[in-house]
Amino acid sequence: MPRITPPVQKISQRLHVTQDLQADGAVTLDDKQAHYLRNVLRLEVGAQLFLFNGRDGEWRGRIAALGKKNAIIETEQQTRPQDTPSDIWLLVAPVKKDRLDYLAQKATEMGVGKLWPVNTARTQGGQLKHERLQANAIEAAEQCNILCVPEIAEVTRLQDALADWPQDRALVFCDEAARVGDGLAALDDLKGRKLALLIGPEGGFDTAERAALAAHIETHAGSLTLSLGPRILRTDTAVVAALALLQSRLGDWSR
Amino acid sequence: MPRITPPVQKISQRLHVTQDLQADGAVTLDDKQAHYLRNVLRLEVGAQLFLFNGRDGEWRGRIAALGKKNAIIETEQQTRPQDTPSDIWLLVAPVKKDRLDYLAQKATEMGVGKLWPVNTARTQGGQLKHERLQANAIEAAEQCNILCVPEIAEVTRLQDALADWPQDRALVFCDEAARVGDGLAALDDLKGRKLALLIGPEGGFDTAERAALAAHIETHAGSLTLSLGPRILRTDTAVVAALALLQSRLGDWSR
Image (cartoon, rainbow over all chains, first blue to last red; front, side):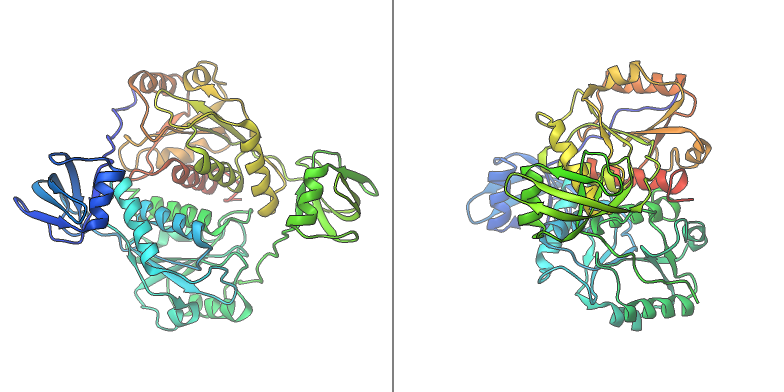
């Protein structure tokens, strides 16, 4: 008989905080988070909820005070230890607003450690708001029971990122011009390596960028081009698909 | 030197039609499609565009007439032969409106052959509109250079779908309660098999559904449970992630 156990219970009332968390502590939340507790989660004084900050694991707490200007949560007990943070970097050319929100959420669900927006000649996104990316990553972590929120790096020009690349990290470059099947078998050779994934802009890379990528791959052991199949994928689809391949072959999906 | 060729050129002016396509033919489009050509793609009489219908490949055509009530496209030459349609079925518990649109688009990009909405005890979606799912699949095919639009099956209760399951098709059941790593190696044993993927509702399956799935797996060779890692994924994320695993190990990403 296959093992089909009851489903994992989702905890929807989870809140990311910046403060340290400890036994018998108290955390004071600002007006925005108090509003969220009152009007979105519809909680009242005495209600139980779960807190995490990306460092101290998950804690069960109880609302001790809930006003318009702030809220106080008393922490009771640690319910989960902190996960080891993911070390996967995702370099991605920003897309437009709604789909960028979506992308930050998906990257969090898929266990990215650092989300690094890179500008390219054909990047289509508008002005990129660091705080908005961070808020989307936090929201995904709250909803999906995740304890680690990815770091959001400052936007960098792709060629500047490549020029200063750490030798110990392999770059997996998802290339829509790669031959179908390219890179899949070579992925398995990256076991134990630090990893970064690069998803390009929907208009493709320009000639200078492709030359820089080719030079990078030639001079950095482990870096490779990966095909994501015969169909053109939108950026946010490619992010999830490529991370699924990495996590299942090299990351925490295979443990 | 790694092979880094110029990117594939995207063709944005592609239109899905229902009519047959042939050399020196003419296709009459209705008012909605004429509106789309005029006001969305901003084309005029004489403009070139590409047509596909999921059966006859892709054809280059030219606008011969463009009015408010209809448009006439003269077909000139086939530019791509028809792809072999995908045979992967995706059974998925519907999610709410916007994310269901998204899901239909993503399933199309990832090469699903049949998108089959299944109702479960904890399905959260509202009234499901068959036409809307179809429109989203067509839009994704138009934008992503895809020649095959997935069939949208009628909504079915999960247990009814399982009760009448074809013996020659393996069901890959993405189970959030599976142990991390479960099913990954077994996927490789499904080479050459007809495949279906099942992504459950965000609230999980109920006890009766889990019993039906356990019984299905026990009595259907090849059917298996697959883990999508240690984090809970939203339904639309799970769809892309699971299809990436299937396509890269068994489907058209590995050829």
